[in-house]
Image (cartoon, rainbow, N blue to C red; front, side):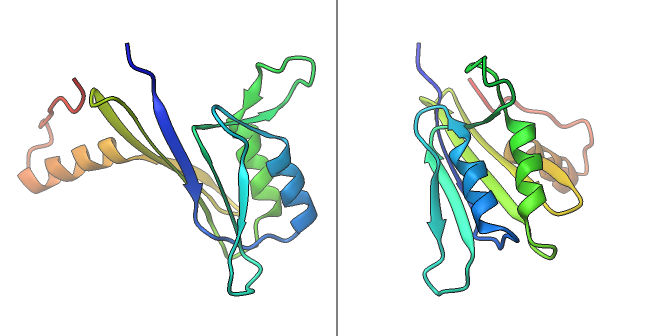
Length: 140
C-alpha cells in the first residue's frame, strides 16, 4: 500500500496586517511539515507560504490536537488579505502512479472557492468533444 504524498504552495499576495498573518501561519498544522512563509524578494511586501505535505488547518479546539480545520484557516487568511488581491493555495499530490491530484483553493476578500484539476479537465474534455456524457477513469 502506498502513501499519499503532497506538496502545497501559494502565489505571492498582499496582507493588511503582517503580524496577524504570521500568527495565522504559525498556528497552522501541516501533515508532514511546518508551514514556511516566503517573502517576495523585490521589496513589494508580498508573502507566500507552503509546505511538504498537506495544509490541514488551524486548531479550533486547543484540547484536541487532532482537530485542525482547513476552512477556519481559509477564513482567517481572508481576514488579513488585501482588498484587491487573491491567495491561491495549490496542492499537488500522488499515491505512486495510482492517482495524481491537483487542487486549488482561491481566497479573495469576499469569497472562497476551490477547483480540482481533474474535474476541470473532465469538463473541458466534454466541451471539446461536444459530449456532456463523456466520462473516463483518471485513476487506477
